[in-house]
Amino acid sequence: MSTNNKPKLKTSAMIASIAAEGQRTASAPFGEALLKLAAERPEIVGMTADLAKYTDLHIFAKAYPERFFQMGMAEQLLMGAAAGFAHQGAMPFVTTYAVFATRRAYDFMHQAIAEDNLNVKIACALPGLTTGYGPSHQAAEDLALMRAMPRMTVIDPCDALDIEQMVPAVAEHNGPVYMRLLRGKVPMVLDEYDYKFELGKAKLIRDGRDVLVISSGIMTMRALEVAKELEADNVDVAVLHVPTIKPLDTSTILREAGRLGRLVVVAENHTTIGGLGEAIGVELLRAGVTPQFRQIALPDAFLDAGALPTLHDRYGISTNVMANTIKNWVN
Image 1 (spheres, helix red, strand yellow):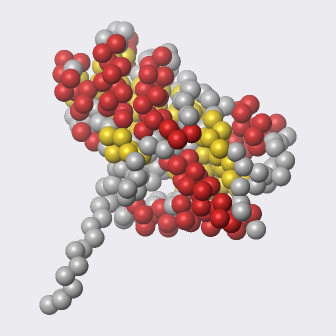
Image 2 (tube, one colour):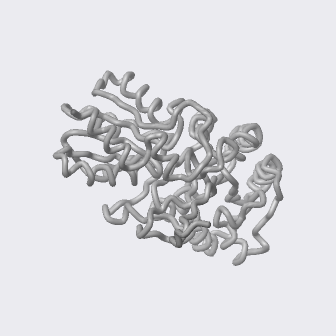
Image 3 (cartoon, rainbow, N blue to C red):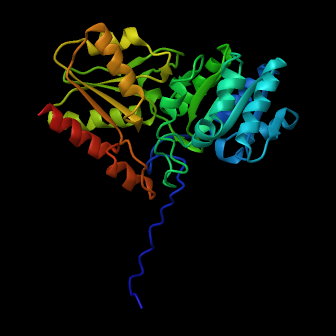
């Protein structure tokens, strides 16, 4: 019998919040922002495939039960029904997990929503490596798939503030939108930098002379943490946040990447194939802008299952591993 009376640390593979212990957070920013917007926009309806609670849509459902539609575990039906609502003048906000939308219902989004340029907003939780459930739930290739879809706007928000401001912005945009979604207790990061989300715009969050990290989603949070950590090593890191993956803010990216003397690193919570890194690499080559270029991203592989901190270390997207990687590149 063990005499160790220390409480056992418990970790869950199904971690949907990536907030560190003690980090400032906001609760359910997507659900709260949609609730506020729905009071002003009666055409908004909420729809999900059995995942209202796990995408924060339950907040909307409780306030507007007559405008909420639970479609069950039928993502293809969900997308088809959303298209029908949009044809009749409604603005569906559709939620599910990113893997189920992009892999299971891709053709329905492509044919029923995007081809007709319908006003459907698709918000998908567990993007990239934000769950430890393994390949069945890890949407490591969702941005590549959605970037390839004509007429689809693609967004990868960093934190709670990004999400809060993203929701009304996508409602103002006429056409289909795919947005990655962080749910539950979501970190609050960008409010320290006087940040404002603008659809289609990249934002320089902080400047630096040695390294430019171009990032989206949670990797912008990581990049800001890395920048603070590397100050002790006299490595000055700039961070350019790119929340809109498509359309890409090419002019801002080229301007910042074209400044001489800086290593350019693209950091993304996505496979190396077809995401932000490749999109930026192509634009740099087309424009003849040729900085020293590196990429931090998930491998082109089926990822392991496990606790998120372990997986983030293993695949190089944790703060410590990312900081060491960049420091080695600079040195």
